[in-house]
Length: 225
Image (cartoon, rainbow, N blue to C red; front, side):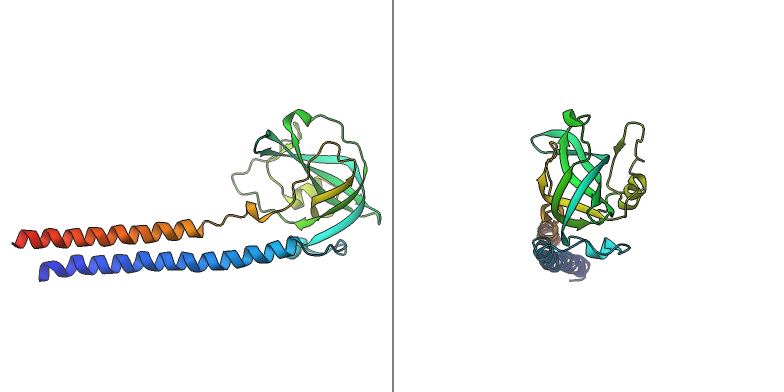
């Protein structure tokens, strides 16, 4: 019986750990589903005016807003791509509201071929959502200001470059001349939610571990016969 004790303990403890990890991922899945439902409801909520000047919009991420004014012609092109279209750019324009404030407007996507198309200042009415993307890290290249290409949306850096408030509105609908820019509304599809797959992986490993334990115990028993 002594020969059974260690592999049995190892099997039970290993299965318990793997099952616990699987159930933890299921709890994370329930939490993420609830969070995504709340974000979806917030994105689709009633539009508000821009927050007062000086407000930190990090806490207001996804809040729907409506604003009227005009782009100034100053813009940033962020390297991007679109399925079925190919490489292109996200157009971030300086936008001056009717009250004289200047903020950042993510107008949407243009294909590579439209990069040098003229986009002078134009009057627009914009319905969109406040956003504060977290796309930069230590591996993100610095903007290529010579080529006028950025590699991620960095609200403070873009605001400093274009001379606007650090407020970014991602357009969902635009009334006026879009100048060939296709709005890319914020959606939860871009938020990863892989906890179900992780849970399946841990439970599968628990089954494999239990099978290996049973096989080892069977081998021990065979050797004793």
